[in-house]
Image (cartoon, rainbow, N blue to C red; front, side):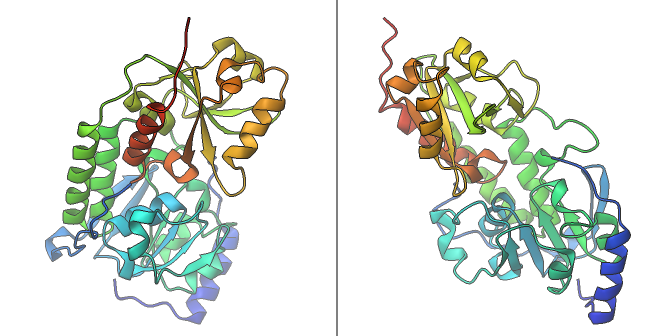
Length: 334
């Protein structure tokens, strides 16, 4: 895309964004990232994304990413030179991608404003959630489109028009391929999927039939990975049975008493800067309903980074990590 937007158009965009209607919504290879070149025949690309028709007339050259999952996938596709800024990261960039991120500009630690995004003169905004793309956030999608700025959200995060599909690694790989076409890196996406698939197929899941709780956040009422989302996909691939797999949603709030009744063999803790795994262990040890759980008393804790809990290039690595951590845990069911 070659259309450039000057200050007057930015001002117009901000005025339009103020009138826009906000939408409501809630480890890659160690080798260098593949080439992101894309032949002209790959453009234009039109997809329906979260119920919104997105047209990318030519390979985007100025991409703004929002959230870690989108930023890291863009880097894994070899697009570092085309990412003009990233925002709202959930933690450090994965070590395997650090070499591709040394010149990455961080726009803001939180959700960027429409004004901040438009000042970067982007071709495409690649956001982690629909809720990032509102008049109060990085810009309403319709307003951005009227300015020639495409927007794209990982399909696994689409929630506004219909519940997200049940996640599987096959679906994840399909979505990576679609993302590669939208971002103008289809060959790199194919190479990435082949590498991720090979790693997944090489895994040997834990065979003990253990049950697990995926504890994401919450103290009064825990917020856990339920039966249709990325946590379920990862747990299943690692050989674990999710104690909340009967809840038909990606995430759910379940009472501590119900968790005690389901008595998980192990507890997966989501680690983040704002809600660490250690903090969650403290909650579990102090709560009268959970401190007597065998998994808590015997310290059967597994840890995954927050960025691995959303669909992206960290999901296969999360399975590998869980399998390795499980090998160090003994469970006596006598």
